[in-house]
Amino acid sequence: MAEPEWLTPVEHDAWMALAEVLFLLPAALESQLQRDADLAMADYMVLVMLSERDDHCMRMSELATSASTSQSRLSRIVARLEAAGYVTREMAPDDRRAVIATLTDSGLAKLVAAAPGHVAQVRRQVFDRLTPAQVLSLTEVARALAHPDDSASCELST
Amino acid sequence: MAEPEWLTPVEHDAWMALAEVLFLLPAALESQLQRDADLAMADYMVLVMLSERDDHCMRMSELATSASTSQSRLSRIVARLEAAGYVTREMAPDDRRAVIATLTDSGLAKLVAAAPGHVAQVRRQVFDRLTPAQVLSLTEVARALAHPDDSASCELST
DNA sequence: CCGAATTAGTTGACGCGTCAAATAAGTTAG
DNA sequence: CTAACTTATTTGACGCGTCAACTAATTCGG
Image (cartoon, rainbow over all chains, first blue to last red):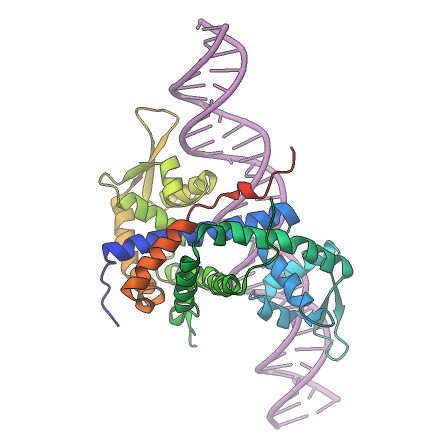
């Protein structure tokens, strides 16, 4: 592959600014959601994923994939959400290994209550700071950077 | 404050793309660094910030800001780096409340060893995907987003 | 039908980040 | 001078995510 040359000054500036966003923006979104709704982003995502199903339920393994988390993390998230009354867990009838998580009315209400504040925070932290032209630039750049090909952490053989 | 109910379609597209970057890019960078150098991004950033000083040292509070972390987090990071021999801590001569963190030769060596792989990953994940003009757009947009201002979510009493 | 392999999900130990409290040293006003 | 702030940093308790080990059900080969 290409030799490890250093970043140019221009790239270095860009990277420093991006790194700061990468550190601080998720924290700002997380803290709003935590403070105003007592939910972590991951919890919020799980509620969103369940709410998007007609029957408001999903298998744990499927839910983990949809919310982009590991199974063990999802297991702990759903345990917390269940303790809070936002979700129920029951054994799947067809496969007794599987667990079906179901959004409760209370969970849906929680999501409906949390969503506007979250959206408002996204607006404050992102769109209120950009001109329409910058929003277009952002879209273009973000799309170019999406889908990282993490060849680095690929399969470990054996 | 009056808050718009939802994002416009253009904003929604931008947000979806940005959210994906926010989620996947740090993971891709973190995993490379962790695997190849046994460092977290935050640790690496601290080493970088120190290395960029002529005297290779900085006050804790300044370092926290530079590395975009809280003071308490920085305190723990530097404690770990010190335990690993990459950094030393000493009292500031002029203000005995302050602590000066200094990069050791070993820490600089660690950084020098880790940098090429990390830079290569940054290049792969970011700059290889952007035109020079897009790099400038990125810098501009990232700088606009770089200072989250969390006061927005109105502190309700107490 | 038995036993190995596979799949689903949970859990214990551990490390890290956060919050609030603590420690400590400057700073300011009377 | 000193009591009350303010600033700089650390630390204890706590919650969360990760990794690996574990339980348990299903599948597959023989």
